[in-house]
Image (cartoon, rainbow, N blue to C red; front, side, top):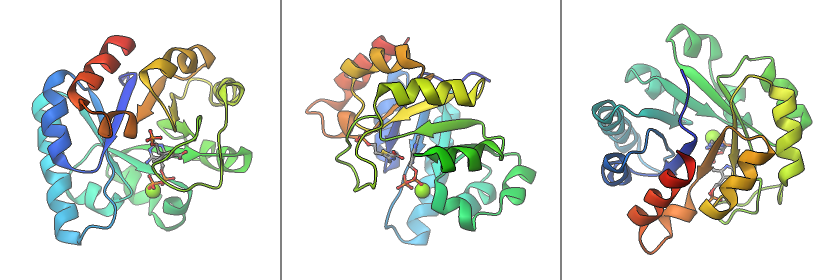
Length: 198
Ligand SMILES: Cc1ncc(COP(=O)(O)OP(=O)(O)O)c(N)n1
Ligand SMILES: Cc1nc(C(=O)O)sc1CCOP(=O)(O)O
Ligand SMILES: [Mg+2]
C-alpha cells in the first residue's frame, strides 16, 4: 500500500471531521494528557471517520487501544517502544511507523522492520521541546539512503513552502501540525497542502 505524501497530525477527532472531506488520506491522531475514556472515544471516532472517507488513520502512542479498537496503523517513538508489546502489535496486524532522531535510534528501528520511518525535527518545531534543534535537508538525504524502500516521513517545522525541498532531499511523506492548526484558515491551508503534494 502506498501512503499519501501529505500526513497531517491532529489532537482531536473534530479536526478530522473538518479535514477529511477536503481529501486528506493519511492522518495521525496524537492525543496527549486526556483521561482514558476520552482517549478511547477519540480513537474510535477517528477510526470510523477515516474509514468513511477512505483515509488511513495512524494512532499515536496508544498501542493497546489501537489493537482493542481494531485500528490499522500505529506510530511509536523511542520511549514508546521501550514499553510496547511489539509481538502483540504485529499479531494484531497493525502497521507500525516509528520516530528517529539519530543514528542509534535508526539502527534500533530498522531491526524492527517498520512500515515507515520518521525523521525529525527537520526544521525547528514549536510544538514540543526537543533535544534536537534541526536535522536539516542533508540528513533527510542520508536517512533515505539508509532506509531504502521503507517510506521516509519528514517532520518538524514543515510548511507548504518547505515541502518541495524536503521531497527533493529524499522524503516520501511530509508531516505537519502547527502549519495547519495555527493557521488563520486551516481548511485553506490543507487545500494548499493537497495541491502541493498531489
Ligand atoms: C510522523 C511522526 N513522527 C514523529 C512523531 C513523534 O513521536 P514521539 O517521538 O513518540 O513523540 P510524541 O508525538 O508521542 O510526543 C510522531 N508523533 N509522528
Ligand atoms: C510530534 C513531533 N515529533 C517530532 C520529531 O522530530 O519526532 S517533531 C514534532 C512536531 C511537529 O510539529 P510541527 O509540524 O508543528 O513542527
Ligand atoms: Mg510517542
